[in-house]
Image (cartoon, rainbow, N blue to C red; front, side, top):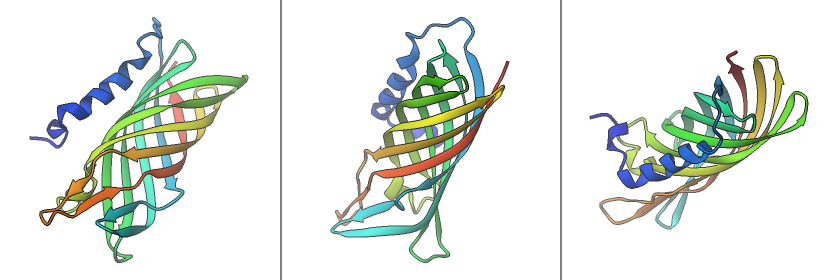
Length: 193
């Protein structure tokens, strides 16, 4: 059984609701695109383990995915994010994976420049069984950004604020929570004609 098939039904509902938010933007020829971006945390990921705070070191995110623009102003993305951060000893890396769907409203401010604002919902899961207790769970967020588009290529900068919805309890009853995080991203979009 794959990790994705283990996602509880109650966490899938927000994902489906977000994915369907662009249904009203009916269009016969949506513009499809693929994207990739790199993100860095404004503050490194932090976990609360009982009364103590567990801070991490250097942290980065790498995202790939695909999407479509509907009615020129509605953008829907589906993607995968690989996150990596140093936890504990500087030589120890922890990894996260996240599948997500994202909606953005595009506001043109010049011929080739759009401002973007929207919401995201996803499910984060650990790459290693040991980390699974700490970081599996649903994530929601909001983002703003700007895109400069030249023909079929778009260059994008963005700010993301994510909220981790699930607390985890160890066998001894101590609760672990992942604090909200903020990232700045830069990426490239390739639009198909």
